[in-house]
Picture 1 (cartoon, rainbow, N blue to C red):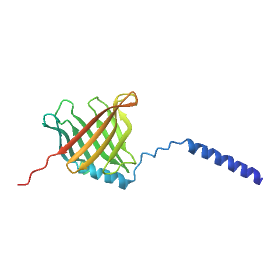
Picture 2: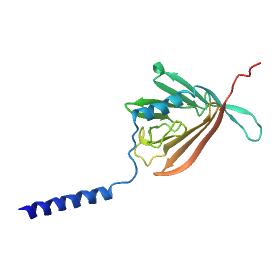
Picture 3: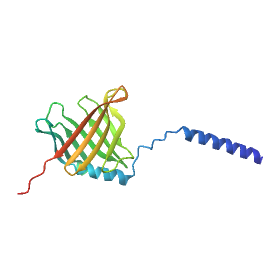
Picture 4: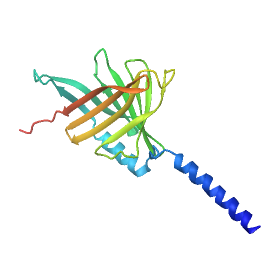
Length: 182
């Protein structure tokens, strides 16, 4: 009887080890509430207007506008404010996760979740579903990396997915204007 228990136990352990060996090595897309909250606090510090400078002409164009709404619980980002391609992204906490919904010029609404690798100095979002889409194969914004360089310099890189593969990257290298002290 003892040998049957041992053999059964060993076979069960072998099955469990096999399943674990096949499991993906990628960490789960979850955050501790403290980590996600620290990233959201960093995002909230972006409130204001952010400008992109044309490399050739040195002209400045309003590229991003951030504002808090819903009692400070939602950060609204407007891309290309007032222009024909204006889009909106809403960031907020969902339980212990930092999430966003991007209201795209293409007419879809990708949902993203901050990854476990996110820190306040580099916030990484990955696709977690979407609205007004037939499948993940539809063209949509799939990922976002936000890198606050300092309090007045920000780089945001959006990755478009086409046919289920990463495609075009839209990069916002922007700065916030500050009042000069006289």
